[in-house]
Length: 308
Image 1 (cartoon, rainbow, N blue to C red):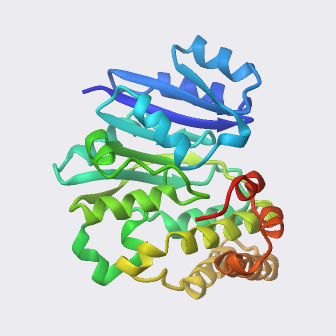
Image 2 (cartoon, one colour):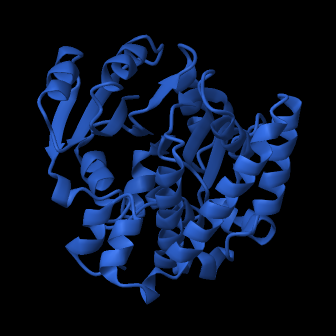
């Protein structure tokens, strides 16, 4: 069975060489790698082609989290499609094969995603976030779980996820337009089509995501806006459940355990800023489009055409 690995990148010169080397060391056979570069500068193309990867370009003013991945998925040749963020690295030679095994374990599985952990030298805030979202127990979420889990039933992350090509194609891929959360939208469509989503905790990648508060705030604004854009998910599964109190308590315990109590006020302030940003995103339709653009990590997306 052929597997395609799809890697959208933007200014990925510092990430791509190491990621492609790590892919070369994986024990998964019959692979093709597609590197999809936004605002290409030439360096990444040479790196990709030197590793035998296919390379394609996307102009900055046409990039879209959904549309770009849909384009790449259609061009891929694999029966299994693995999507990666440029800033992840597998932690073992069998990371990808473990994820694919979890996907193919049951014919009903339409998608699978793996565990993300922060690099060892990450700030404690990154470790808290990854540990809260990605637990160390595997599980499978079925359509019937929406009564128990609500909106979270559809969660998965395209930073490290695998799909059955035929299942993804049947739901219209990721669509053509999404500010963010195209993966959650695909997860919801798969569940409504009777498929299941597997979380494979033994397939682990290190995810070096920026933790600067300004970037995090814009990210949470975009998540809030995306949740409003995808109101149909909430209509079918229920609204996102507030988990801020539980997240804050976990973070405080982690900081105290690591003997970093002086960071608790900073952590509290970060949580408050992200909450405000998320709520601003949920009410973005009341704000001027130019202001939405300034509050977002993807300013051009807002100015291209009216939001969904």
